[in-house]
Image (cartoon, rainbow, N blue to C red; front, side):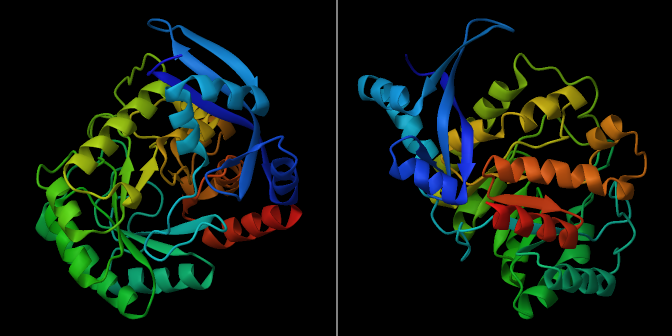
Length: 352
């Protein structure tokens, strides 16, 4: 084995079963001790459109790792506990509530476009159980046009200031360095960049100087054109490689490795088939060594599968996607329907 292989944990266990399997030496910790995995798929590319894979039990994986430095390193990244970020421990999955201060977001555009409406919505999401409030002033739906920084600032800063002042943990959903800087002064505790710090040339240096946790999301192309026939060799491995590269660039720019959160970018330059492939392999992204954020709430691929055209009517499909993320031990799920997602997560945790 060598550099360029991928490790997909499988046979994931949670709660008491995870603890018992680890104590018996039958499973390894997955991103800490909250979950465990019993088997893993080792994947290697063998040319365009071709991959080789081999399944290993936990015992076989440990033996192989003793002989292969790359595998040992990837296994360490998969297993190690994630450090706290912005005061957030990873004892349970965290819910990020979406607050779009926009007139044109794909699901709730215009519903909370004024500051007071957005502030009230943020409070309601927090009361429903949101751990983080993600404030965005620029729609990144397919086909969306860029918003000037001045307009984006006017939309989000009053909302961030008010909610942060009231003690809520706030993230800013932006691609622009100027908005990141102003949001941090206003009290934002996290930067959530759908371009993984690649849209604005000044963003990496600003993110590094601010020292805030940063969500690096995978996207292909601009929102205006990203759904124009996106093509990948192997979407899961390509997205993993791209995120790994963006993480390395961020670290080289001065962003602390332990403050990076990775997001595979469901719906951003991806077809329905691409999104399903990523959803089915979420545990592979633990190999990046960072907490994972998953945002699939109400997205178009859910409508394509279920036949529900109205984005606001995709609650059941969104809950199914969130539950799939929790099963793969994803640390953060970003959702519109906070109350229902919190209820689902609590039930899943209790049954484990």
